[in-house]
Length: 360
Image 1 (cartoon, rainbow, N blue to C red):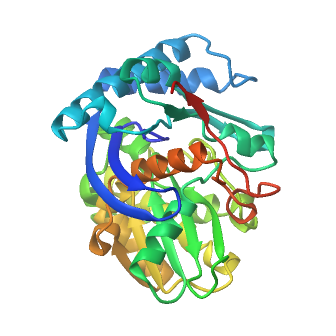
Image 2 (image 1 turned 60 degrees about the vertical axis):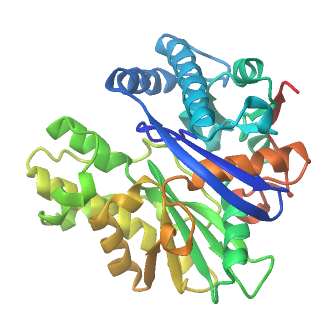
């Protein structure tokens, strides 16, 4: 799983029947280097003009080859570290790198060659998870809610639980533990993307490590208020976003600390803004994804939601590997023809399976 962020590839080994989760095995991470991230940024820029999900203009083709190669190398190292032979794995779920997501146009593009992975490892590879959802009227995202629901049921949590993934874009899964069908999901707004882009532009560092800069800054309320006026925030779920959906005003007049604090508050406030759109306020927020390591972002989410907030690791889950685990789980569901998305999670017309199987 590499998703919308550009930090690297998350890997995870999961034992599941596609309904319950028997065990969460080892997990790992293979970082992109700076040249990889530069190529991905160029690819995202090139993707802005495409009209078909099969187009690969300019750097997009080079980026797809790079992403495929990096995933092969990452999997080789992961399987070796875990002492797993290729034949010890039944199926590989391969999400790919998102370079464009415009659900209003029925268009989402994740680059990466699933057939090449299947040929290399001799194992079935499920890829292209999102297209079938879009073809049936869905947003194509988020797809992890069914996995979140399986985890919440396993820990027997009480009261509505919100599982919040803080990737480049933030998304929520609302699980009503008193209602077996009470599953709602949507993107909430930016996660790390705006903060990361700001820090890279101003400091050369791709992240605000631990939220250190934001913790020392003052929030510019006028900027946050302006950004929160986007009509996305009042739309009912399900709904989803592209990484670059928000036009941030010029922050050059702000210090690094103040700019980081302002964008961090925006991400946190966007999360809290989804609460009135849910059946009941969540009693517990479980944070996962790269943003879980940003202590200031997590703190501000707690302040804005006014609820208990925990990192996924505290429940025996993995904050870092949650989405990689989810796509392993979804790969098994895809092989069995089980739904990957529901009307309440992506807006699809009916429970819909998805994924393309390469090899095997």
